[in-house]
Image (cartoon, rainbow, N blue to C red; front, side, top):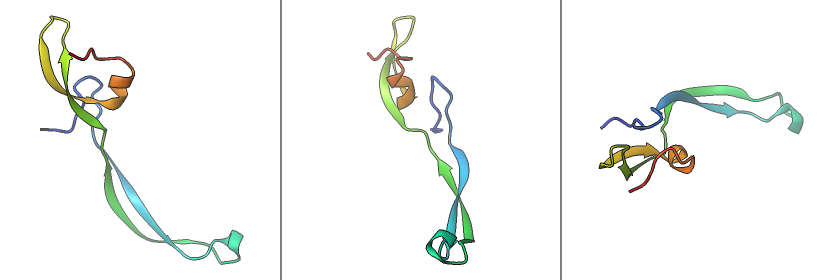
Amino acid sequence: MAKICAITGKRPTTGSIIHRKGQSKKSGGIGTHITKTTKRKFRPNLQRIKVRLPSGQVKRMHVSVKAIKAGLVEKA
């Protein structure tokens, strides 16, 4: 099952973890330097809940918490 919200279409996005080393200039050093970057994923906070559809049918869906809090879905 893909990690995609059934209501908003939110999906995982990619980014990177940046590792920095060294003492900051503010603290009296020569500044921090990037030593390594690695890929990572930002995943949406999905919950599997029962949703009442406009037709009156009840169905289980993967929905993001942001959509639930905003009231975009009617819980069954």
